[in-house]
Amino acid sequence: MAQDPILRVYAAGSIQLGPQAPAIMDRIPFGATTIGVFVPTGSATYSLEFTLDYLDIDTDRSTVPNASARWFTLDDMPAGTTGNQYSVVYYPFQAMRLNITQLTDTVEFKILMSTTGRW
Image 1 (cartoon, one colour):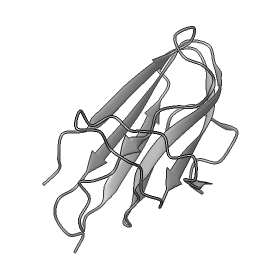
Image 2: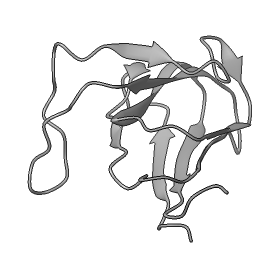
Image 3: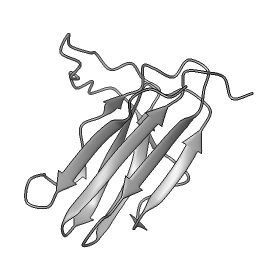
Image 4: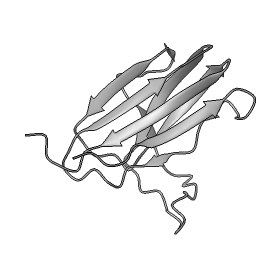
C-alpha cells in the first residue's frame, strides 16, 4: 500500500536556483519509492540528490539544515537532466531534494513511498 505522496511545486521567480528544501524519507521501511519530476510547461534543468546522513527534524516536520550532510546525485537523474523523468528505488535514504539549475516556468517534484515489501 502506498502512502500519501509528497508533492512540491517550484515556480520560476519564486525560488532561488540550486538545492531546494529536502523531503524527509521517513516512511519507507521495506518497500519501493517512486520519484517523479514533471515539467508541465516551460523548461527545467535539474538533478535529484539524496543523503544518507541524518537531518534534524522539527516537530512541524520542517528540517533544520545539517551543514555536515553529504549529498549524492541519483544516477537516474544526474546534473543536466531535463524534461519529465521518474525513477524507482528499493533502498532507504534519509532525504531527497531537487537541485534546480534552470527553470522557465514550473516543475513538480513527487515522491510516492510504499509501506509493503517489494516481493
